[in-house]
Image 1: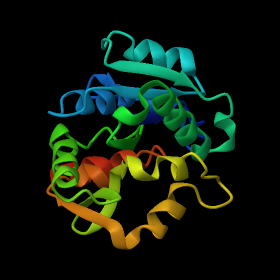
Image 2: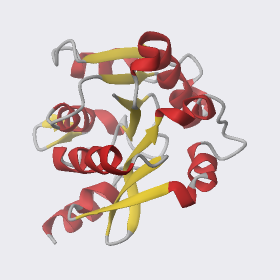
Image 3: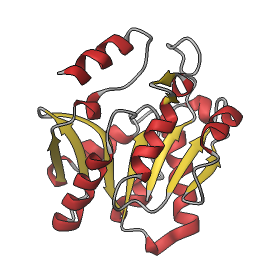
Length: 202
């Protein structure tokens, strides 16, 4: 089970960064397709907010394994989108969930192998958290054990959102180092495109 956060305002980017065309496809579509192409993820919940119709239209043909939910409070920050996604997953699937992957919508450069790796690590070790990294630097996606799902539903921007959870369970976290720089790449400003191109050529 994966949650993709696609509700943000993209305040620092000219236009919606998730709809920026990268090598022929919107950034958000790269993110969702990479997760769909992993060996293990059977369902993706995309949390919509800002530009909900356009983002939905960019993904609507990807099949029944992609679901959508709407965060009415998306302007409050990422924590509200995490909680919206978690509530949707918990209310619909409940005890069937072993773990939840959370990925920002601009995780377009993390390939399917990254998702396979962190799920393999989780299945073998069953930690509270598994986080993908490159050269020791933590990035995305992050996997959370279903044991802490209720804590995920209580995060807030005031308590630094998911950072409060990752700090609490720091000693029960496995950092899965990968060979893919894409796990530490995100798109906040137009200038980030140059950094992304540089890192992907290394």
